[in-house]
Each structure stands twice: as structure tokens, then as C-alpha cells.
Length: 501
Image 1: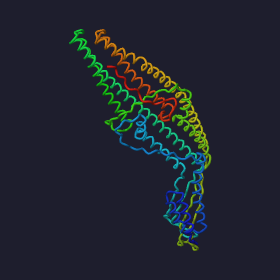
Image 2 (image 1 turned 120 degrees about the horizontal axis):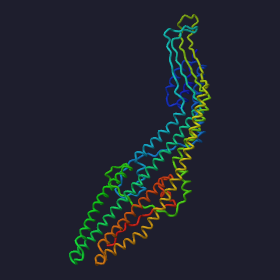
Image 3 (image 1 turned 90 degrees about the horizontal axis):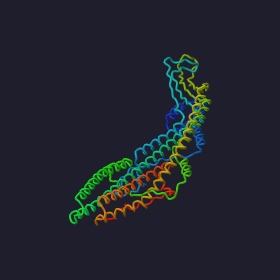
Image 4 (image 1 turned 60 degrees about the horizontal axis):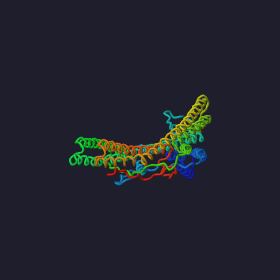
């Protein structure tokens, strides 16, 4: 005979609401419990508590596998209007890391990977089934025409926790990809700033040289018209050189627009935005310690972190394959409605309650052994890629350091020796030409030499800055200067040298 069991129903509802997002299972159990006897309700309580314990045990094992490491928060991406003032290279890098679409996409990929963990920890949804007898079944207790059942599959808790741990390694891979994208974008932004600064320096040098040619033209006109010591050819040659330089200036202005558009694309602002960069030139404070940089790169490069995560992932997949030897259980509870009508003379209308337990038999050992062998091969492959990439990092850093030191030496020679001497030579030849002691060809050659050296200085400085930018990325840092490294300092550049007038 059925008795009220409302206190038990309330306890079940509270328990299930604390452990499940969906209350449909609770509603169903509540409806069934109303007609159960105390003994049957206790059986249902056992099923519910088993379901709850199954959910929590996997999370407990997962925390043990991951050493209860906290989740990694993803910074929100924001869009801001570019300020109409000069910005440093570091400020452009920070702006690009917030707004560049590739970085934003990598953030979303990282967030998507994190959402796999609760999915792997969760139990499958319970199954509810109903059966209606088209021809009622006659039993001694009465006529049975309807049955209602619920079943829950209990995947091995350790297996679910291992899958969640594998998903965590995928999160670490996504985090490494995000960091790699940030390093690549920051390098591209720095290089775009350096190229834009270089082309603007060249434009300034070119305009300054136009002024020098105007002075030479003035001297040639005076010597031709007043003193009659030179021919008109000197005046025409100066004017031809002026036309050539103006043509070069037009091409340089076009390049400036292209470099500005490239920087605008990288920081995700309209290409028509006027971008002004505060000039900062990288310089070596003292010679680099190649091995120290290589060691730092091995600790910081996200690609190596991704390889390590892949290796751990494959090792956990070996454990997961071994766990396939443990069966999964399915527990089911069915209720059959029984009426007092029927052909049985002793029908009492007591409902029938059935409790069933099932499990799979892990007898396909070939599949399990193949999964273990696959995971071992993938782990060995990831280990080889890890070692190969370490060698590539060492080669890259060694090459960049050598290139930076060579470029710095050449720059020092240009600035301290060649350009000052070339400037004095041009000034002397210009003065001697005005006094008739030097030919126009000598003045023109000295002017061309000075122009060449000044442009070479700007080009080498740009190449050196880009080399340092690549070296910064190679050791896994967004900006070396931000870490106040003793091996690299940032200083304002010397003013663009102008020829004496």
C-alpha cells in the first residue's frame, strides 16, 4: 500500500538541484515518488545518491590530476580611438595586442578550448522511456497497460577525469598559440613602426638635400652670371639633379603611405588615420650572452610550451586507453502502473517497481592495445619536434645576435667617422667651388657621397631595430625594454644630421 513520502521527495529535489543544471530529472522522480512505498522510495534515493556521487568523484580525481590548478582568465578585448598624438613603439604594440583581429580570434579559440573541460567531466544525460501496452498484460496483481522508466549511465569517474585532464592540455596548447600570435603581431607592429620611421627619416634627408642642391645652384648661377668662371652646364646639371631628387621624394611619399597603411592594419584602425611614431632606436648596451638568451628562449617560447603540452596529452591518452579495461555501469529504475481491473480474482492494484543494473564487457583488447600504441607514437613524435625546435631556436638566436652586433659596428663607424668626414669634405668642396678652387664635378660627387652615407645610416638603423625586434620575439618576449634587460637599452635617436650650409 502506498504512503506519502513528501519529506523524501523534498530531500531528493534539493540534492539534485545542487548537482544538476536541468531539473527535468527531478520533476520526473518527484512524480514517481508520490506513488511509491517507503521501500521503493529508498531504492530511488539510493539511485539518486549514486548519481550525485558519480558526478563529484570525477571532479575530485580531475583536481588531483591537475593539482587543483586555477583556471586562466582571458582579458577582454576592447576597441579604442587612436589618440591624435605621438605614440611610442611600445604603445602601438599594446594597442595592437588589444585590437588586432588575429589576437582577438586566438583569445576566442582559447576560451573555446576551456569549455571542453566541464563537458568531459559531465555524466551523460539520464534516459527516460515509456511503454504503453496495446494489449494490457494480465498479472495476478491486476492489469498492466503502462510502464515508465529512467536509466543513468555511469562512465568511469577516473576515465572522465583523465579526459578532462587531456582537455586541459588542449587549453594549454591554445594558450601557447595565443602567446605565439601575440609575439608575431607585436614583432610585425614594431617592424612596421621602424619602417615607417625609416622612410620618414629618408624623406627628411631628401628634403634637406634639396636645400643643399638649391645652395649649389645659387653658387653656380652667381659664378655663371657674375664672375663668368663656369659654363651654363653646371647650372643645368644642378637643376637636373634637383628634378631627380624631387622624383625620388615623390616615390618616398608613396612608400610612406603604404607603410602607414600596413601599421594601421596591424593595430586595426582605419588606413586613413594619421599615425605618428616617437622615434626610439635600439642599441646594444654590451655584447649578448648567446647561451643565456637560448636558455631564456627555451623557458619562454610558446611553441616549446605547446610541444610539452602535446607530450603530456599523449601520455595521458595512454592512461585513458588503459582505463578502457574498466567497465561502465548503467542503472535503471522502471515503474509499471497496475490497476485492479483484469481477469485475476486476487487483483490488488499494487504497482510494480523494477531495478536493473548493466555494464559493458571490455573484451576488445586489440582496440585498446592499438590506442596505447597510437598514443605512444604521437608522444615520441612530439618529443622529436620539441628537440628539433630547440635546435632551430639556438640557430636563430645565434644568427640574429651576430647580425645585430655586425650592424651596430657598421653604424658606429658611419656615425663616428665616415659621415662627419664626408660632411666636412662636402662643405670644403662647396666653399672651394664658390672661390673657383674646385670643380662642379667634385662638389656633385661629394654631395652624392654624403647623401648615400646618410641614407645608409637610416637604413642600417632600421635593419638593426628590426633585428632586435626579431630577437625579442625569438626569446619569447613581447618587448625586451619593458623587462629592463641590461643587455638592451632604448634611447632617443640623435637628430638627423644636416649638411652645413
